[in-house]
Image (tube, rainbow, N blue to C red; front, side, top):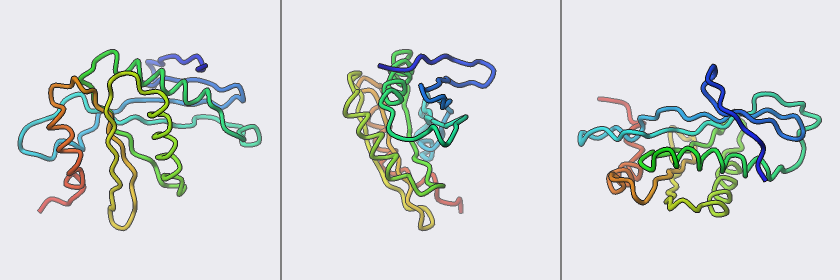
Length: 162
């Protein structure tokens, strides 16, 4: 079962509150990391941002499966509105928990993929930092092959211009 979520126009994100009173925000920001090639723009690429907005640390212990169901419902809504959208997930590593986030995201995808989505993973090494990323693209996306090819070479978007 998922938590009830709602769209907040003022801050541009979906929000939900867990049974433990933890507030989360989920937003989709336009992403240009796949636009490093001269072959043209790839439209409708977004990065999903999941952030904990408010938490009582003493009450935020243990695993909450309903969070996974809620994020799944938000991602389903995202793709149902347009199957040509592309979703990039980058695991934040500021707290050294990126690998754990990546594993959890992979688990959610395996459990909940019923939309005909393909998932590709890539670990980037940028200046000695590991960045775990994933790409979700619908099999019916007209630019599927170009999107996957660019994602496989995503390091290009992080190289300094000469």
